[in-house]
Every structure is written in C-alpha cells, then in structure tokens.
Image (cartoon, rainbow, N blue to C red; front, side, top):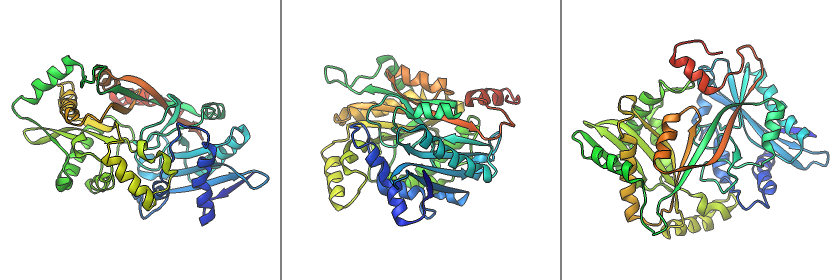
Amino acid sequence: MQIVEVKTRDEKKEFINFPKWLYRNDPNWVCILDSDLEATFDPAKNHLFRQGVAVRWILRDESGKTIGRVAAFIDRVRSGVYRQPTGGMGFFEVVENREAAFALFDTAKNWLEKQGMEAMDGPINFGENDTNWGLLVEGFVQQGFGMPYHMKYYREFFESYGFMNYFEQYSYHRPVMNEKGEIDFPPRIMKIAEWLSKRPGYSFHHFESSKKAKFASDFVDVYNSTWSAFKEDFTPLDPELIDDMFRKAKPIMDEELIWFAYYNDKPIGFFILLPDVNQIIKPFKGKLNLWNKIRFLHGRLTHKMTRMRAIVGGVNPAYQNSGVESAIFYQIYQVCKNKPWYKELELSWVGDFNPKMMAIFQALGAERAKVHITYRYMIRDKAGFIRYKDEMAAKTRNEPAG
C-alpha cells in the first residue's frame, strides 16, 4: 500500500471521488457537494487557515487503486486551550480492511506528532462542529445536511486502534404533525412558552437578511456569553465570521426558522434551524452544475425540503431555565402552522455533557434517533485521557482534571 499526500488536481479528484465509489450501493448516503469539500481545504475560503494548517492523503493498494483517504489539521487557537496540544483528523473513509485503516490513522497521527501535538481528535472537521463532526454509530439512516454518515465497520477500526470515547453526540427527532395532520407540540410546554412570550420586556424576532450584520452581532453576543463558561475549547467568535456564515447559508435558509430572543432589546438567546437540503441534493452526486442548480431551485419552490434541522442554539446563562428555549420553539410552532410542508424536526446535535439541553429536547417530545462519537487518541499520554464531561465538571469545581 502507498500513502500519497494530496497535491495535484488528479489527487484532489481521487480524494473527492473515493466515497462516491465506496458508498455506491448504500441508499442512505448523501454526497457532500464537491465545492463544499474543496472549500474546506482552500485557504482563501476557510478562515481557519489564518490560525491553522491542514493536509490530506489518499491510500492506494498495490495495483494503484484508491482504497482510503484521511485528513489531519491543527487549529492553533483551539489546540492551545486543551489540557495538551490537540490536533484533529477527519474525512476518513476506507474499504473494510484493518491494515488500510491503521495505515491512515498512523499517517494522521505521525504528522500531528511532528507538529508537536500530543492528542488527536476524530473524526472531526477543519471548521465548526455543526458540520462533519463525529463518527456515526447508531441511526444509519439518511443524515440531515451537515451530519456525517459512515460505514458501520469504522467503529471497530477506531476503537481497536486506541481511540477513546471523548464525548457522544445525540440527535433528536420528532414529527411536526400528529396522525390527524395537526401541528403537535406538547401543550404544557407551549402554554409556558406563550405566557413567557407575552411578558413585558421579552421579544422575539426572526432573522432578516436586510439586517444581517445586526443579527450576526446578536449571535456573537449570546454565543460568547453562553459558551465561555461551558466549552473547554471556547474561543470568542468574530461577528465578521458569523456574517459570512449567514451569507453562505442564504441559498438554503428559511428566514422564519431562525429566531432570536431579547429582553429589553438585549439579545439573550437564539436557535438556528435550516431546511434539510440533503433531501434535494442526494441525486446530484456532489455536482452543483447549472442543471443541478435548476433542480435545486425547483425542489425548493415545490417544498421538497420537509425536514428542519436545528443546528445551533443557546441562551445566556442568566436566562436559562426561564422558558426562553421553549418560547423560541413556540415561535417556530407558529411558523409551521403556515408552512405545512415541514413534517419533521431534527435537533442535532447535543453532547452527552449537556443534560439541560437533552431535557429540553425530550420535553418537546423529541426522541433520540442517532448517535455520533467524537474520539480522542492520546499520542503522548502525559496528561492522561479524561472524557469531556469530566473535564467540564472539574472546571466548574475549579479543580485540576484527571
């Protein structure tokens, strides 16, 4: 077998096309758009290259056929806040061959070690964790846009190599309507949410493209106040990056599915839901040519996207447990009354370290449908492995983890 670093145009094509061959007989797999994948490794399009580096490889067998691929990357800002310097590996795909899988793991590990990394997380994305993050281990159904799908045999490869379960990610699903075709959210939750929505000082507004900069600033305000005390790898967000995120999402977003909560005009919470574009792009096989753009537009206009995915949400800690989260979903409930083509709500993902959010999803009547795992491999075990939620518990108590 031969490991080849991806540099040439043909090697980039091999990296892109290998999963299309690997999953050719799997009806649940949806191909990432070629342009989105390439943008991840383009310094001009991925802002993380300002603070990091990425490299990728393909694996060929003795006949020269591609049988696997992998990428490794370092976000120096994120790495600097872990207990040890930590890099990432992702975009892992391989035939059912243990030797081939281990060769790919070795390649990523050895490169990261040479860069001074002492741990390796994977499979993750060289980007934000709402996309291509974690290994699918339960719920082998067609994934929502941005949620990764994998071969069932990957789990054994990861765990036998020595990757350990750093945290689990749960996706919750629920139908929007009941068997009678009526919008159906838990009455108790909706009653509390309606009451809060009418209390003096509270207001709720959906996203508007004409006010994109304001909503980007509000997003950052809530995010930084919420996650600074919660995420070990927290780094403050730049409003410019969120403004760019909204710009890129414009072709697929429904503005009435993105909601912000305010108290006396101060942003205190948000939930961002997007229609599931995978329901349209599945037959595109990664290509977004002119014909597929026309097909996409037709699919959107004829409401082929019937699933909504809540990709991120947060509430300022000072307003948590007050019903703000439910009140935001009350606004979405009102939207669904006027848009009956939305049949399913996906809430993905929530980590096993976040019981409050899991409780909210369960109170909304959603059930756990999928499980992904983010693994950590200790390249140098100086600090010792500890699961994410144990690190968070120690941080809360101001104790050393481990």
